[in-house]
Image (cartoon, rainbow, N blue to C red; front, side, top):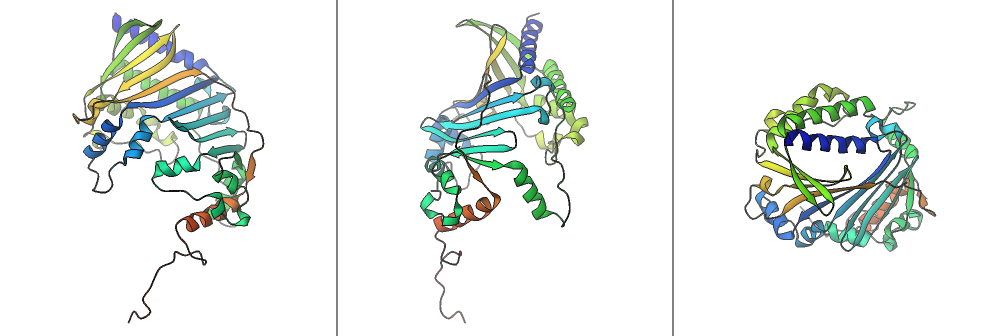
Length: 336
């Protein structure tokens, strides 16, 4: 009875999410730098390719915030129904990158200094750009810029197509297929997951869900294979052979409900690492009421020539390119 009651409460909470037209998510890791380094070492990193300390520190405080807004309830929405989307990647030191999709435009801004540190190599600065770079200087200075995605798609299609050919429509995942995938996931969860009420805490109800990892993901992918042809190109499903070496350790997720609404999910992934030194490794997802993404005022528009030419020139300058655009090297005068 407890299994049915807890599972029903969760199902109702997910139905409430699906009935919303706008929602915000925040993804983050509940871990520490020591566990991340131990996890990296267990994957067989080659000497010299180990996870840098600064990257491990960065990941421990990194968060990804996502907001989506649709004309229809999210459960019924296809790609064409979404009218706004925003995403931001931030760390304990500030925002790394943020972008918004409003209509045909994508708006972007980033902290290039912080991104360079995160990547372990400095990125070009505005002074590295040639005069014709235009709006790319705003990119490197952390200002908002915008890109006309329709124009970008047309240019990309023309570059790779025969003269006079019309761009092919972008593949989309229709609302019916999305609903079928969701139902497949629900059926797999109902069969393989053990639900249990973990009681109330701080005015919220907690429900835990436990399942063997390999069994859960294998059965889920088996459920959705009939829909494989409807998925966008490149979305290839792993085979049973691909998953046979995945750990079958039981994984537990803790769901927090407040007034029947799902507000947080925590998943403990430490056991999946199969490394005793990985003490703390969890994924945290927080849900909140969505907001309406708006177009930032004063964003500079980038054109395809600036993106293709200016940034490439800046990267070559940052890498020590010579005046002819090629890296400067010392060659012996006589190679005979």
